[in-house]
Amino acid sequence: MEKKQNRKKSSLSILSIAGVLPYQVKKDEQYMNKNQINHFKRILEAWKYQLQNTTNHTTPYMKDQASNFPDPIDRATQEEEFSIELRNRARELTLIKKIQITLKKVENKNFGYCNSCDIEIGIRRLEARPTANLCIDCKTLEEIRKKQMSG
Image (cartoon, rainbow, N blue to C red; front, side, top):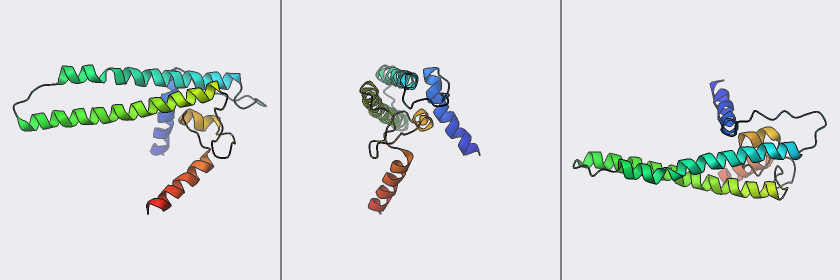
């Protein structure tokens, strides 16, 4: 049960970054209508802005924290911390690129549909992972294929 709550909190944190609540689908509402598109555009832009701010603060932070420790253990510890920080920033830059690609899909009205089978991805899945480009079935098949290929 705790795992389920962590997942819920994780997807809700993306929504909280944008300052939005989970989208409430209305009866007989068309999928990816203007309200839904605006909802996801707001989420994606806020998420991108938050990641860019974090990334922009890395270099100044590392310069401020950089010290030439005479003790090799202290120096190694600092180098490891910086290495982890840089890896995290690289992941965030990759995510920013995915967000930019997704925002282009929003502009081109291709957002919300599976790249593989062209069915609706679903509001809740997109709220949990706004950059998702596969429906849950196609994503599951992709993961099974990857497992089979890797051994």
